[in-house]
Image 1: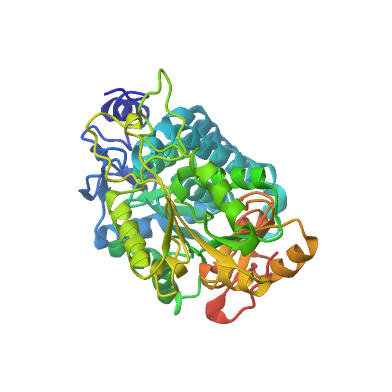
Image 2: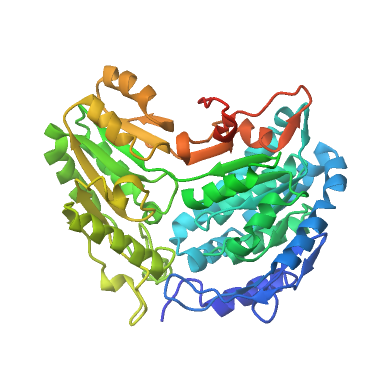
Length: 509
């Protein structure tokens, strides 16, 4: 077996020597709150989606243990908020420098834990570092006239444990808050643990606990000690979080998915579309801003399909760490987060086909990109379906994986309606060479960010990020809004957001 960077045991030993307080000799991951690392909890084995090999075992807390952890974490808030902004900036800067120094180790963890190709894993580390660095440069302006809310609870998905979760925690801390996170249950616990350990060593009091969302979620949302809740995940879980916040007066940022649509009308730059299609398949579309639905003007569909097939020929799927010569392989994506996810996608595909959807494309896995005899049950090649029926789950729900759906339309009204099927999304793109079409379509899309001939993404610096309709509830984030979401204004100014539960009008900044 030839793997880039050696085996998991070698990597764990290296990290254990670096931060032994967090990576325990028995293979368990500790948590941290109240100023010290804790070995409380029961070990929960985790496995790599790459080949189902065993990884670390986070020490998962029960409800009573987690309650004490939250209470203890909250006690750190006054002392941290009392520090000068210059001192907080100095400590966060040291944390950022440590993340930069250990870039390769963090990237290897991402490759092992969530199956991210190494090049993309390195980019995730870089975006974390560069994103927080921007807030450090702008800290004086962004925090002027603002005070921290206190303890911020973070419940995040597994797909971006550094560039979303750790990034947010460091910015929350920079603003004077204590940032507490539950490590993602599906993957990424070791990545987050190392990042938090490096920040703690730099003097930034990030707090981390391990455990299941079903057992600890309500505690992290409803506890009186928690002053703000940041959630990233699916709509079903997001609705549950929103329901638990109804009788609580606290800040919240609930980021949920939607079907992000890409529409084509009066368009002819097929080389650009090919670039967008291949770029869009990074990490197997396991992103909240992935484009899963393509709505195409009828006369453009033959050329669209030809371009799509040409783009799919460039998609490479395989084991993220299988050596290609002396280097890690150049892949578009590796495994999905689990074999269960692959099975659930297949169930949705089969349902759509049984209801009348037309199979347009089905890729195949290349055996040469895998280890001999390895478990490949978490891998799946790209799939595309035409005319998915409305009563099919794939019509309304984000697949969160390498599945595309196509719709052919004859009018702009049809285009807009088909791009709005999920009652709110995070991003959308209009591919057109007609400025009139762009002007007419853009404001009618139920999405937060609209791109004209460009892909849109999350973004965390100058640009705000949020959602429309059911894809978001609460404060917007990104740019200055990420600071505003976790601070109070001395002038009484409220943060901008989509507060549907209290009937505050939504607007795009």
